[in-house]
Amino acid sequence: MIDDQTVSDLETVAGCGTRLRQAREAAGLTLEDVGQRLRMPVQVVKSLEQEQWQKLGAPVFVRGQLRSYARLLGVDVSELLEQAQVGPVVPPTLVSHTHTPRARRIAENLGRRVLYVGITAVLAVPVWFATRGHFDGTSPSPNTASLDVIPAAVPVTPVGPGSAAAAPAEVAAAPVVKPTATPYVASLAPVPRAAPAAAANLDMQFSGDSWVDIAGPDGGSVEKALIKAGETRSFTPGQVARVTLGNASAVQVQQNGAIVDLTPYQRANVARFQVSSEGSVVPVSH
Image 1 (spheres, rainbow, N blue to C red):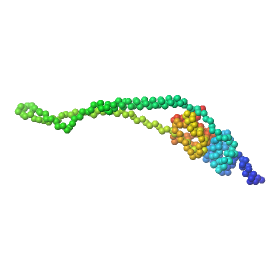
Image 2: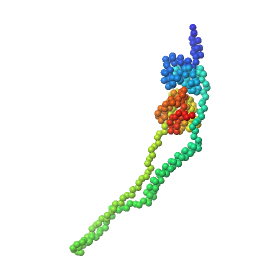
Image 3: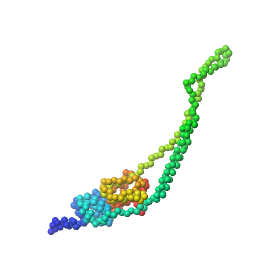
Image 4: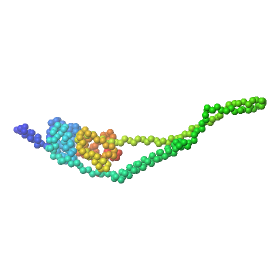
């Protein structure tokens, strides 16, 4: 008959995966229940219980998955990590495959500025020529007549018999004033251009600990760290070129407010993808 001390010793000798499986069965949970609660594929949960670390990617990702599984079952995390024969955490070495030379970036910036100056000149020169006469006072002034002046009397000679004896009569004749049209100046103000569409931001929400490696368009590192659960990250187009997410099932990626499905870019709970200059998520090009 095995006493209590012997049972305790057997539990200590039991592997990390065995401890997780025993705790799961004691809690009455299935592999599918664990995968749904941790948002983790069932195959990954099964590999953790069978201690098949080589199927789960880098050691840092395996440790993060073990912590999440242990917290769910209420098992001591530090004891599990000591029992698990997982290699040390070594940051991965990434090589940038998308690098734009500095001379090309300068040439593209100059080209955009020259185009902007040309468009501004095409719109501004016609307006300047059309309004130059109006502002420098060279345009003819319209003729006006004052209505406050009383017109002079004009003598009228009667025609007919007895006109010689008739006294000249003075009749007030009002001058005829011809209306003059006011000059019309056409406005050639440039038509307002439509505002550009809002940039598609890339947002990340972490529901569990995840190791990330984010590189910029120039190949430099934007962020390489272990991000804790509950934290968020936000990037604008052109800021990020390549992203690697460990424990990808615990990371929600949104592009301009829409959730991005990481399944096409995910392998063994590690997601790798690129971000185009417009902010679109695309597969990694090798």
